Amino acid sequence: MALHRFLKIVSFLFVLVSSALLFLFPSIRKTIVSKSADVLAVVDRAVSLPFVKVESKANDLKNLAHVYNENASLKSSLYQNDVDRSKLDRLSAENKELKNLLNIKDTTSSSKQLIGEIVDRNYSSWDQEFVIDKGSSDGVSDSMFVLASGGVIGIVETVESHSSNVKLLVGNDIASQHLTLKIDGQGQSIFALLSGFDDKTGEFRLLQIGEPVDIKKGSLVSTSGLGNYKSSDLPVGTVTSVKKSSDQLGQEIRVKPKANLDVERYVLLIGE
Image (cartoon, one colour):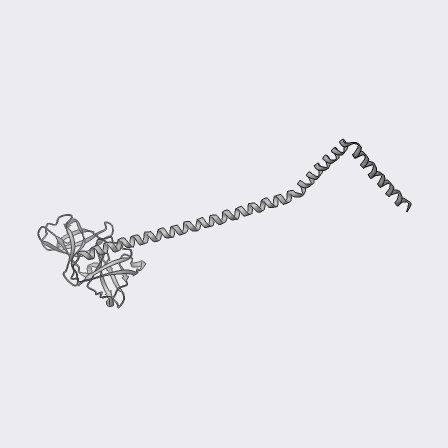
């Protein structure tokens, strides 16, 4: 009990003396205040540093998320631009195809003219045949020529109610169709059979049977109207060369096609 009283007296005296010193000696008070401020500043920095770092990391993550979202948005815009550009290119190509077909349509007098769309094409016979979306219910017959940009590319081989199979003139067995074509000579028409297609040179092979006839390079080759396919004067190509046939029975005539044989989507059907 006495010890407790003694400690209280000592504490009171310490506070009293300290207060007196601070009051009597301002320089000491100033030094103590300054040191205390330094200590508080150090403590404040130490305490706030983790929070500053956490806030900095949070800002970094926020900025990163913003950049990521912006990048994703740009990628999406670029992708959509590519899609739109691809769609525009396709529509432009289709528009060009249809315009070219309509130009041919306007220059022929055949009574039956239809535009068909390619709906099926087998990989194994890609350059031989394809199927279109027009059939007998649309007026298609198996005596019609098939044209693309520039001229004739094939014939209708078989017809169903709502579709038809088209055989291309570049097919391996096209000679079996016995197609007779017409070559414009000097004041006369020269007839020749379509005997095949040369893949290496990209030319039709025609066989003119009988006595050799003078055929000029650049002469126009068109449909004759003879046989099963009655429409005449539809452009096929131009003569590039003429030579005696290997069997000596006539002349082999090479013809450069007028049409783009790599047709994409639409074709024109012409017949009687």
